[in-house]
Length: 249
Image 1 (cartoon, rainbow, N blue to C red):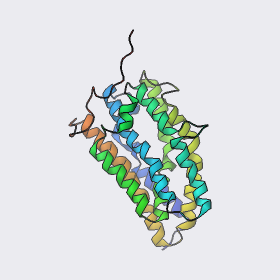
Image 2 (image 1 turned 60 degrees about the vertical axis):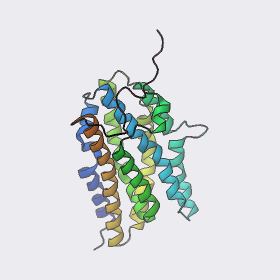
Image 3 (image 1 turned 120 degrees about the horizontal axis):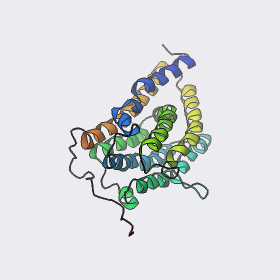
């Protein structure tokens, strides 16, 4: 049976309450100051692969959209990450964070040290958006509903617990607090408008669940490689690699 608009929105929000990756133990460790410098670097390297793939995901989505109004509304997502003449973009801001934690930005941008599981999960998300229905693709993006809380907690925790953290290093998260709400408002309204059968509502909810799995699995892989049992798979970043050159004193 099809749910009312309010009931279906509550269902989507409940998925985030139960499954969003702010509940993952790695975030408790990171935000609480429990990560070593190398664990923070590993997180920055692997999360970059997700960040740099988001505009490619959005471009794949837009290539399938026939409605000019939807394309216009979605275009800003690519600009928010890739940047414009007036906005450096989220990818450059993330690389600034990489430099702040002691990494060489070119190494991070090369994605050479990314965990196999991170690459697999993120590529699966891009493929999902490319191949599934437009409704499922938009619904998968609705993890942004839950992002402001984790960004705020991250800013507070990193500033409190790590010497590298300052306004410049954390500019990515501060900007997402301003950028994400407009994306969320549009995406949520679009899903609620277009999930007009019980089957479509189920598909949208499953898509959002899939996306929470994508995010959670990245942290599982990160924890296994760099926290416990700390077994780094072949080809992934090893502490000491890709560090920024030290400035002569």
